[in-house]
Amino acid sequence: DMNRSIYSLLLMDDIIRAVDQLAYAQNTSRSNMVNQILAEHLSVKTPEQRMHDIFEQIEALMVQQNAFQIQFQPSDAILSVRTALAYKYKPTVRYSVELFRNDPKILGELRVSARTQNAGLLRMLDHFFRLWEKLENRYLSAVYPAGVSCRIENGRYCRTFFWPEESCTNAQLGESISSYIQNFDCALKAFFELDEQNWKVGIDQISLRYQKALQKEKILL
Image (cartoon, rainbow, N blue to C red; front, side):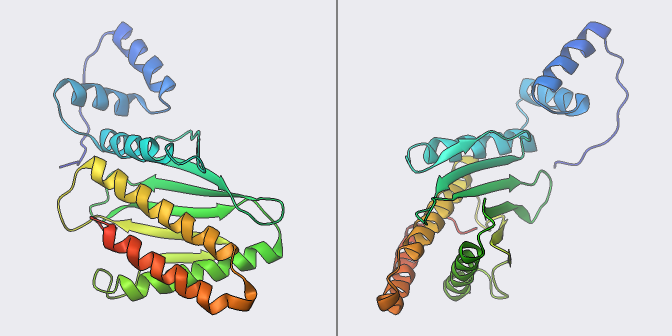
């Protein structure tokens, strides 16, 4: 149970100063810092510890891929990685994962964006996002009968990650999110390398690659 209540505590000024310094260093609030300290001492898992464990696993897996760079984030609820896209001036594509602290249904969101104002590139990204949405709705219909929850707008893609029905560890969740990003990125880069003369063949190959990757997944988000 991750519900929170208000309690009054009488603490020494020196302890509060130390807590405030630690909270400032970790970019969090005093109450949240006290909660984390007590949880660690009592071996109680907090949402912050869960997010830390998941992000730690994602980082460990993503750094093994030379194509990705981990980006610093001011929030402990967000992790971002970036990669270069082979398109003219090699624009940067960023994958940002935000985990939600206390939502019983939604684990978090993935947001994909490119730092560009190029209209042609934005159109290409939208075309790929629509293709990815179509693939997910086709092959994940058993998991999402009403359709995958995602938003596509002006070269940006946002995908909701729901809690899986089966029980899993934080490490497994991190592995699943990392795998999703890598599969998405692989398909995206393949899309930008398509030959216009063999467009349909290329799309079919991306679809086949998606199906094969899906078969290897242990957890579907």
